[in-house]
Image (spheres, rainbow, N blue to C red):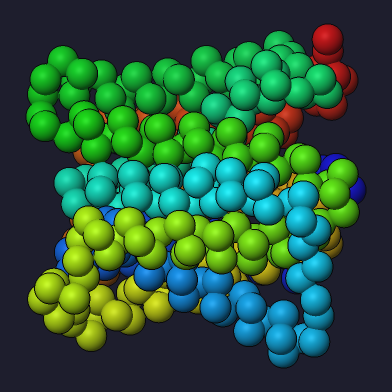
Length: 304
């Protein structure tokens, strides 16, 4: 099911998922105003894992994770949840949610590099190389003035870039679960559960959350939305879309999340992005489209 025409239902699901994941950056912005990043990550993975366990219980399904899957799942928890969640949480105390979403969209671009070096069946092609050049050109447009010392947000922006790289590594790391016969939803539940267990002592020892000021109601609402809607339900919808429309079509969500985040950030938070950020988004979007193969005829994408 590669690049096949999607139905109206599948397009609706794709747009809904883009809106949910675009909204995640707005919710993070709200939550980290009330909670330190480590406590935010702990509560997010804790609530999200509980929601997925409830999902399996309602459906009366077994997660069925074999013992040999747990070490790779801990790796997934670190690469796909704990570290990138913390990096984005810290970064969004300093930069706009829309900018964070644009930097997050570089994950598939990093994924091309990671897959080339660590897999045998996803080598670089001329079109993917073009996508890389466009994507890194977008990063240069966005980060160049900060590297030159124009303002003090460079470290926050680089934190988002590192988080996007970790997401790419996690995508390659996750390939091992297919050989173990573990479903993607079970992997998601396992990694969030492992993440909650790992983060509990860290958050308690470092942040001592019982000493923190009470979080306002909007903070709790944003946190629950992040955990249940953006994380647990988001995973379920994404895997349903992959099953229905194919992985290539599902990856279109990467192109749609930044515009959704920018729109919601402007409407709900009053954020306004700089022109260079929007120019960077355009270049990154073109790079993703090139990597995806939709800019060129199929015969070109198949070149060695």
